[in-house]
Picture 1 (cartoon, rainbow, N blue to C red):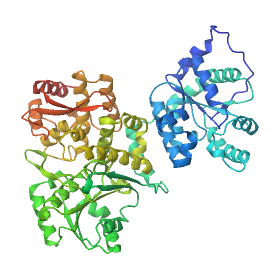
Picture 2: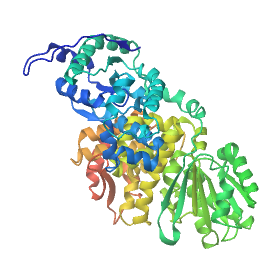
Picture 3: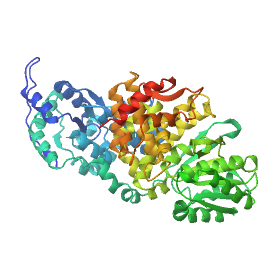
Picture 4: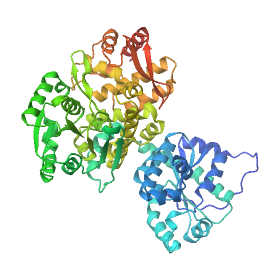
Amino acid sequence: MTRTQTLGATPAPAPGGGDDRIAAIRDGLRGRALVFVGMMGSGKSAIGQRLAARVGLPFVDADAAIVEAAAGMTIPEIFAKYGESYFRDGERRVIMRLLNAGQIVLATGGGAFMDPRTRERISERAVSIWLDADLKTLMKRVRRKNDRPLLHTEDPEETLRQLLEKRRPLYELADIRVESRDEPQDVMVEETLAALAAELPRIDATRRAAQKKDFTKAMTHLHLERAQTEQGATHRETVHVALGGRSYDILIGSHLLEEAGEHIKRVAPGAACAIVTDENVARLHLPTLEESLKKAGVRYATIVVKPGEQSKSLATFGRVCDEVLAAKIERRDLIVAFGGGVVGDLAGYVAASVRRGSRFVQIPTTLLSQVDSSVGGKTGINSAYGKNLIGAFHQPLLVLADVDVLRTLSLREFRAGYAEVVKYGLIGDKRFFEWLEADAEAVFHSRAEQICAVAVSCETKATIVARDETEQGDRALLNLGHTFGHAFELLTNYDSERLVHGEGVAIGMACAARFSARLGLCSTDDADRVARHLHGVGLPTEIRQIPGWSGDAQAILAAMYQDKKVEGGALTFILMRGIGEAFIAKSVEPAEVLSFLNDELARA
């Protein structure tokens, strides 16, 4: 509950004079930021900047940070080109990132505090100050500038009155209220300092009584329930994979499964389909896909395999090929990979092989397959000698990534897919990693944030694939964590009860970061940051966390020599110079790797 301070004007201390309140305020903040909220024209930036100088903290204006993130577009230009909804999404992510970066004084836009996740994050990491100005004062101030897009109406004063009335109940949730009056700014800074000194002990006591819930535990409650309560969310993204005559689109959004028949009919008129899926996906989602194909008048046959890595075998591959041929699927027909990464890799390799190459469509049903394995044309099966050692590059005709199907994933499977999302931030997009650090929870429970995470991941992969389709160069960057992870999977015999692919990648990325730090390539702080984020969402980050692990360092090293990136008998790793700065390291000394692995296995 906000406490109102009725305060008189207090003279500013003389230049160079002492102020005992400052030390008390800095101590009372306990490393938290100060965040100013309130209506446009309430003085958040002007007062915030002066107060920041008084308490010795950096000042950041969220609107200026948004303009910087938008490559210099002004706020009105962003509104005009993309609309308010787009601006609010970007505003939330910028504020999350800023609050994650350290202790600052932050002035937010007038609508920022309306977002529940922004309010929650401000509550966790900051003390909020509501500058409450009346309508007359606000109008007097905003008339001076014409940079308020929401006031570009026939009656700006009435618009502002309605906004103030609508937003006031949420502003009242701020920690501290300070009346913003037509007084000199130094007077308002003094009143704000007095309010902080008086209220911080009460705020601190309240928060100690209600500590922040552990994110990992909270996920078990938030993952499905909150996703199921979302309304609307019809926003979609399209990512184009530019490969000349093999180019295709990735459609990302909700309700795509119900429309799959029409999309398939559009890209392959008159084609029949062989749907390859597994038992779990068939039980949950196959009726929806079949109904969609029936409505579009598409003939289809269904082939169901066992779930899990064991289906990526020569035996299952042979059976599926035979069933595709038995269904009289011709070269110009389609094979539809309907499932997670295992089904996508298997069905894609079948499509690359049957009749010396058939067309196929990917409909990925896990987060991991939506952001990674369904994109780029890598298909294949496993061998007793290693993972994905038998296969081909064969691009799909279309990818349909429906985020609605992610609701039926177990928390473990969703986390495993999230590891691949994190990978894209680590290999070349520090800002994306920072966004995930700031708001990982949203990717777990928000359809809109899932669409964003999948789209950014696919865009990153599509850009790399367009440069290097068959992994002759920097496409190998997409294997960050996989040299370690594939070895762990091989040594656990692809037993998904013990280790699923994304978990192996999570441990592998943490190992790659620590190995990079050990070699002096990146800081230990960056390596710790990688492991901390993965651990924070419930992913394993150490080899000893694999259930029943018994392999030694020599066994792991031997498994690594079956990695596809091995050249001339020399090991190749994807290592890091920092967050978002991955690179290909060739001819890594096996003695260095062996020593590192021994130390990893000895970790407590």
